Length: 292
Image (cartoon, rainbow, N blue to C red; front, side, top):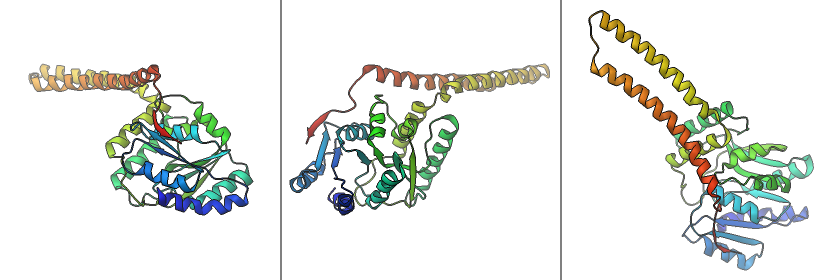
């Protein structure tokens, strides 16, 4: 946290020259390390530092939403505190908005150096899939790091859903967006909490939040299974007519195939119903333990 603050405050002179006052809003997503103490230490020397500390871990999306609600400026920047989002880009982001009329300036990695190859491969496949099945633009390699005008932030806050996928939300609200490209930067401290399994589940949230294409998949799978069952039935009849007989194993394979298709289709439908169930509870996105 102190490293992030030290790097970001270096941009203070640039913004003061533009009559822009910086404000820092740190969101502690239920972490039990020294995060709160570190932010309080920063607050003692800089009253522009603010904190929202959750009562438990509510996830990245809740943290983003809480930060947007707390931020009061005409421009809002979303950043990770591990310095993977370089603060040195802030002046350029500001210039694109102030001088060129953009509503939002996003960032995207042009390389995935330091990331496991298998994760990079699946990430690219995910973005390719979203491009085909969703009308919402989700840019390959896009980071959450972006600067937005107040009207963009207000538009994002107006989307009240509990199951959130920010990359999709940023694309869905639209507005005039400029993309900045930069090389991947390794975090300066700590380790990522995003395992492959968590990233996989998060990608499913993104697909289901911004595409109904999976709901059409059961229809396709049902048609294919019916066709396959018909072909297998013809084969079995021919085998029986030629005197080869029908083996129990063959019938088991047919039954397992059809059963698997049915269970897969039910699973897809259940995922969407589960999302609707969580939305219907109308629970708060987060609970605050401490705030200043």
